[in-house]
Length: 121
Image 1 (cartoon, rainbow, N blue to C red):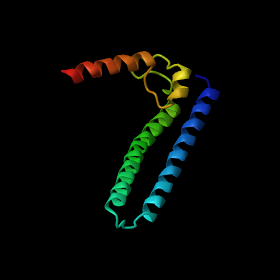
Image 2 (cartoon, one colour; image 1 turned 60 degrees about the horizontal axis):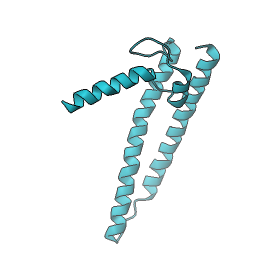
Image 3 (spheres, one colour; image 1 turned 180 degrees about the horizontal axis):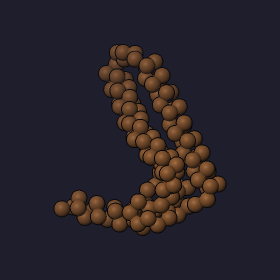
């Protein structure tokens, strides 16, 4: 992968991370504002369900931020874009679709098949 491509993915990852952090700040603000006590049980249940869903989404995004940080570290150390299992280059279309990918499509498919086999045991 050349320097221009690495810079492209670095900008893409940083932009993605900034967007997630901005959305997280908006969520915190929204949750702080919505502390009202709903007199109706159905309204309260809906509000609690919405809050739980939002918090689960933020937790998933928190985990994604650490994957983004790992990808940025790999860009810095020169290992970005190479499959961690085979050492072969990960295709640009895969990195474009999933910039935090650590395995080629083939290696990922093998990994998922092994997981399925072991999960069925």
